[in-house]
Image (cartoon, rainbow, N blue to C red; front, side, top):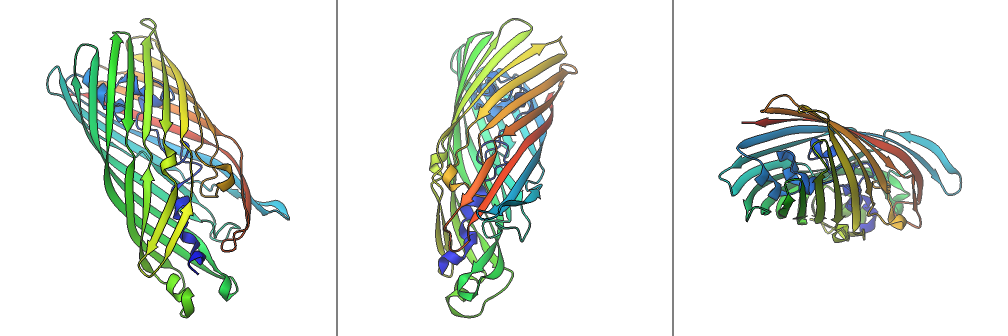
Length: 415
């Protein structure tokens, strides 16, 4: 009867089609970089917010500098639920909630060779919210995940061309999910379950910046995976007092393992002249580390959900035009692959490939204050969920279409 606890397919809660990057990765840690679709983020180092993508880049910033930004994520996604017999017969609106993603960076130059700093960000997250009684309620109704990272970092200039950087990634993750639970032994009795858990663990970030010339530079960075063991509780709306069902349907402590993926990124930046700059980025996300979710309950619950995600690539190109000493215009284009296997796609993550269209503007008020604004339109391909032969949760057929809008604003200050 352990399988009747459908909620323990927690793996699917950690995934959402409208996390604004593929899987549940969030890229928006720099509004300045967003204007170029994050092209050249590991090499650009245009302000200290770029330190999230490559800690070695902070070596280019003199004195003490700070950056504070926020990005609003607005999804416009529709779903259509149905069955293989009757087709798609009911429309669902607004299954993805709006969110605001903050970011902060602070750096201080100790001398000509050594710079230190901190970065606060939220690199993984999602929110999806369905009706409590929709057709796929047993597969998931609420999915909420967020990570909060604190990254102390340092950069060292080896010579006039090459700098290296490193940091610790202290990552806190919190998750909440809900879904309906059917109990076949009791005639499909409908219960609703809620799981909440959190944990804090540590990874690392490495980076290097090679300045080939004053106008051309290259960057590489590696952000390690972080292995988490979430601890929390599972609760039910109702209590069933008899048999084996009572054990699995009772409130209890649980634990679950989650690994956020490693990222390897290469970037290039080049000033064509005093007006035009071009940049490019390529990133590999090692989602294959997300093989399964293994759930343990204090009262004998055990459930393993196979995920088997694949490693994927993100490609972007961008250009900037300096209008004058105060104004700069930015644009970028990106392609983002999904890690989700089409045969195991779920309503918590009906994820598909995406294309990014980005633009931005930078305004330098004076030597101390600089402002950035950015906008990105993400077009996602249509997707279909087709889950069959699930005796516990039932078959589900659904399709999705939609897009995502990102609105960002940041302020940079030189002390």
